[in-house]
Length: 66
Image (cartoon, rainbow, N blue to C red; front, top):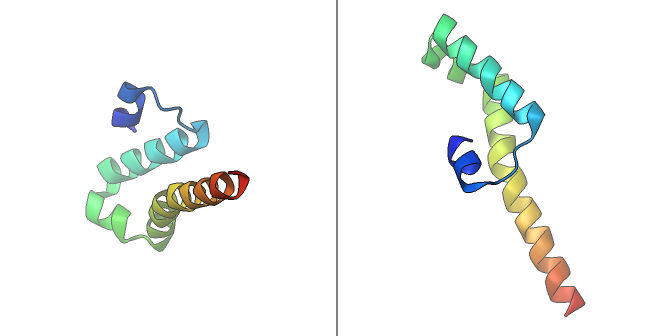
């Protein structure tokens, strides 16, 4: 998110809040315990998959409109 902010890419406020909760959990409980949580894994997977799906849908829509 820091790199996205430097590049000027807009970030979701909810995403920033969740990342801050992960950061606090990582400091309090340790990063291994935080990353081992199944909910954390699902959220990270969603953060990775969502932009890829959005890019594919955008590409398909552009291809259909041309």
